[in-house]
Image (cartoon, rainbow, N blue to C red; front, top):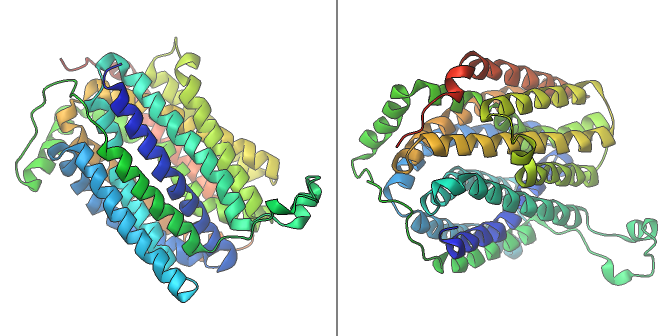
Amino acid sequence: MKNKKALYLLLSANAVSGMAQGISMLAIPWYFADVLKQSSNFGIMYGTATILSLFWGLYVGTLIDKYSRKNIFLTISIVGTLFIGSIAAFGFYNNGLSAIGIGAVFCYTMFVYNIHYPTLYAFGQEISDKKDYRKINSLIEVQGQSTSIIAGALAAVLITGINTDLLTKLGLANFNFLLIEPWQMHEIFLLDAVTYALALGLISLIKYEKSFVETMNSGNIFNRLKSGFSYLKEHPLIFHFGVGSFAIFVIVLIHIHQLLPIYISNHLKKDASIYASAEVLQALGALSAGLGIHRVFMKTNTIKAIIILMSLAIVTLLVLVFTKSSIILVLSCFVLGLTNSGSRIMRVTYIFNHIPNNIIGRTGSVFQSINIFLRFTFIGIFSVAFFSEDNNIIWTYFIGAGFILLSLYPLIFYYKRLINLKQPD
């Protein structure tokens, strides 16, 4: 594999910063839902950040296609260290943070996600040979989800702590050195800032040779944006595929950040330990997809495999509507993690094989902007107070299943043309 050392440094930096990001992004929704009892306010904040990401997401693609992907990662790490570190310091100085400060970290991390992951995939494509695309995408998924599992476990410990009752239940009553007080949000954010700094050091060590000579578009932002839209207009099948295959990701991301804490708190009447367990199982499902999804569908074409995974996601969401069990929830999260990551690996590999690297950022921005708009729409709907009352949250899962079902249409309608679509030279 070409540029192996560079790839491993990139994945290591991604793992280090991703772990603390994961802890923060798990802790914040739970804090709003369970501690502040402000699920609707969190939904409004989440929706506002999402719609602002729509414009940021369009611009991101032009940056990815114009500037060094390594320099983009270095910039993200520097800004993350300073911004989140400053909020953490403010929290230590005032012995706590307001909801605004905590929300600011959540919104900032959302904006980072919008440039981080497109850059990660574009960088992976840039330093890899075509024959290694599947392997690279699986490595990225395995690394990301392994990090999520660790982040979920640490989040459970840091949010709830370890008390004597838990140790007694585990038969460890005499192991008092294992007692851990719940961390305050500013302490979690300090950990987040430190990992950004560590990632900065790892990324600065990356040296690589491009796998191909590419022509970067140096025109102004509007011309570069236009070229992304023009490419997809000239290749409508790729556009239909990109939009339809994104459906699971739209719903699962909202499920993680907005719906799951309310589902557990209002519908199941359970605590943060179930929340963290569900997150860990979802990450395990995603990790399983990274390790074996291509083996499972070795004799199945990409389009059919994605259709199967989307259908499985629909069934899983409907199961959550008609059941009220913690065990079923965590198992369902495992399946959602598997279907989401499995379809993403295959989706990205298909796009890598059909879109040149010099325009991958701009076309990705088009897909990302549509994705953000859809998420904003659903977040706005699900932020209505009705869904936070009693166990009405179950209706959001019914709506999510219906959306994925509708998204299957272009994949089924253009099925034969998609599987026979020629790859660019």
